[in-house]
Amino acid sequence: MFRLGLPLMVTDVIMLVYTVTDAFWLGRYDKYALAVPAQCWPLFLVFVSLVMGITAANLAILSQYVGAKMFDRVSEVSSKLLTFCILVSTLLFVLYETLRFHIFYYLVRVPEEILDDVLSYAEVIAFDVLWFGLALTLSTIMQSLGDTRTPAMAMGLGALSNAVLDPIFILGMGPVPSMGARGAAIATVITRIFGVTLMLFVIRARYREIRLRPTSRIDREWVTLSIKVGLPVTLMTALDGFAFTFLRALINIFGVVATTVFAIGLMAIQMATAFLRGFTMSISIMIGQNLGAGNTERARRIALTAAHTIMPLVLACSAAVFLARNILVTFFTSDPIIVAEAEKLVSTIAWILPLMMLSFLGMSIGRGSGHNMVPTVINIVRFWVIRIGVGWILAVVMGLGLDGIWMAIVLSELVGGTATYVWIRRGGWAKPIIKTCPPQVGIAEVAKPLPEKGIEGGIAPP
Image (cartoon, rainbow, N blue to C red; front, side, top):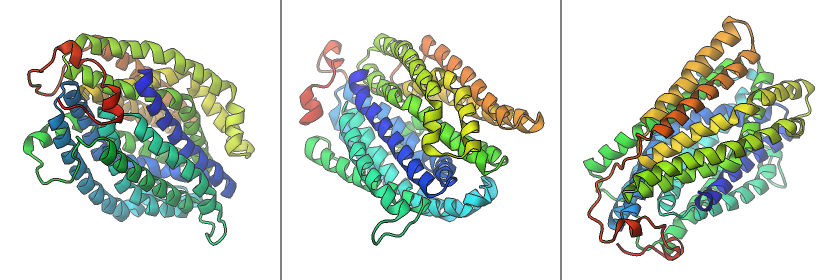
C-alpha cells in the first residue's frame, strides 16, 4: 500500500500545491479573487464525470488483466480507452465553452464582485477539460501496470512550472500583463499540457509492449462493460459536482465573504487529507490485481488493513490542522471577518476528516473491484440528502446561516463514513468482473507484484 501509494500521495500533494499556489497569488491580487477557482471546479467535475467513470472502469479492467497476465488485452483496451477519451473530451470542451455563462450566472449565482473573474477563468479552463481527459487516460494505463511513479513525476514537474508561471500570469511580469484569475487558468492549462506530453513520451519509450494508438475497433463488449462498471462512478462524480455547485449556490446566498471562507476551508481539508488520500487510491490497484489473480480473501484483507491504518493517521493530520488553523487561514487572507469565520469552519470540520477518508477508501475499493454501486448510493445520500437538503433546512428554514451548513457537512461525513465501513467489512464487492483465461502459471506466481523490469523496463510477455 505504501509503496504504490507514495507516488499517488505525491500527486495529491502536488494538486494541493496547485491549489495553494493559485490561492496565495490570487489573494495578493485581490482579497476575494482566491474564491474564483473554487466556483468553477464543481462544474468542471460535472463535465469530466463521463471520462472519470470510463477511466475508473478501465482501471479495474486493465489491472485485472495485468493480474491475470493477459497483456495482449492490456494493449487493446488501452487503445480503446485513449480513442474514447479524445472524442468525448473534445465534445465536452465545446459544451463547457457554450454553457458557462448561463450556468454561472443563473444556476450558481456567483456574487457580482467576482462574476467577471469567474467567467474569464472558466473561458480558459474549458481547455483543461480536453487535456484533463488525456492526462487521466495515460495515468490510468500506467497505474494499472503498477507504475504510480511516472504520473507523480509528471505532476511534480508540472507543479514546479505552475509555481513559476502563476505570479507571472496573475500579477504580471515583463511583457505579460496582470490577468488575475484568468492568468491562473492559463498557468494551469500550460502545466497540464506539459504533463500529458511527458507521460505519453514515457509510455512510448518504456512500455513498448503496450501498443497505444487511436483505433476504430471499439467493440460493443468493451463499451458495455466500461459503461456498466463506470456508470456509477460517472453518476457519483456528476452528482458530486452538481452537489458542490448547489452547495456553492447556497453559500453564495450569504455573500462574497461566505464564498471566500468556504474556499479557504476546503483548502484546509485538502491539507489534512492530501498526504494520505493517495494511499486509498493505491488500494484500487492492489484489489484489482488480486481479484484478477483469484485472491479474493487477500483483497478483503487489503481493504480492512487500509481502513484500520489510514484512519488514525488522518486523525493525527486533523489535529495538526486544528492546532495550526490560525496560521493556515492568515496565510491566504488578513481580512479579520474572513479569518474569524474560516477558523470557525476549520474547527468544526477537522475532526470528521477520518470518516471522510473512509468514503474516499470506499470509492477506491469500488474502482479496483469494479463494484461501484454502493459507494455511489452512499455519496448521493451524503451530498444531496444531507449536505444540500439538511444544510438548506438548517441554514435557511431554521435561520442558522453558515453554522447550519457547517453542521450539515459534519453530519454527512458521520453517515457516509460509517456506512462505507460497514460495506467494506461485509466484502460483497470481492469478486472479479473480467473473464480470465486459464493461467499458464500458478495462482501464487500470478499474485506476485510486477517485477521491477515490468515497471521500469517494459512488461514481460504472458
